[in-house]
Length: 261
Length: 69
Picture 1 (tube, rainbow over the protein chains, first blue to last red):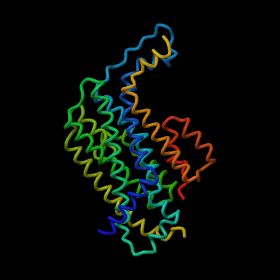
Picture 2: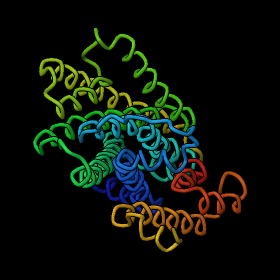
Picture 3: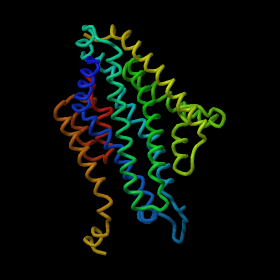
Picture 4: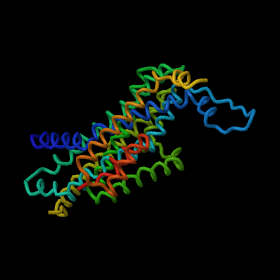
């Protein structure tokens, strides 16, 4: 336990010094600001950059608060995931390569504490960034749109999304533990986006998957999701994440030998 | 419409967070670049990317520009 808190302190300093503590939340906040503004000012934006022929007329759909959250979630599903994977792809593989690893691995450290400290720091940063992004979006949506989702629904939505983001970060860290940095990013992004493709193809039948979580979360904003499916997906995600953590710890120990001196 | 009227029409109350975020990201990226001076590709190229590409520039620097060594 003392090793864990020691490693956690090291992760904290590492995140502060590489400015991850600054830029990861800011990217999420940026999209949280941009998305509601873009939809609110869409008519003016079309007017000023449109190059539309004379007399063309659009009827834009009336966006509700829930629609904007859904669209923002779509942004986070692509750009947000990309940012998270790129931010954490080097967490373990980078230390093996840079020589920080050698300083650690010659000592009798617990690889479980080593991996879990990285996992805790990364998941905390990712989830807090995501929540800050939605929080910022909420301040705009409350001011600019009608039909704002209730606060309790928002909390449930954010909790479900936090599980999904936790899964994404776990996958990235395990990939980073098993593969070199470039391979880790490729593997994590590949699995995430191929999973989304499979989900869009057979998602109707495969209701218990981590990739379904954001859809179930969004369902809280407009009504409520099928509670059985949601519970199944949550359990499935937790089991997969636990397996990934175990695999990641084993790989971290095995790959310690590959550290550059 | 004169230039000052156009300026006054911009809803600054809604937009200022975007500008502040851009400035913070840019400063953080430039401080980090100045401290490390080891990037994938020429340093001066990254200075221009950070300053002239809005928001995406600093993020690109932090993700792919920094050499992780």
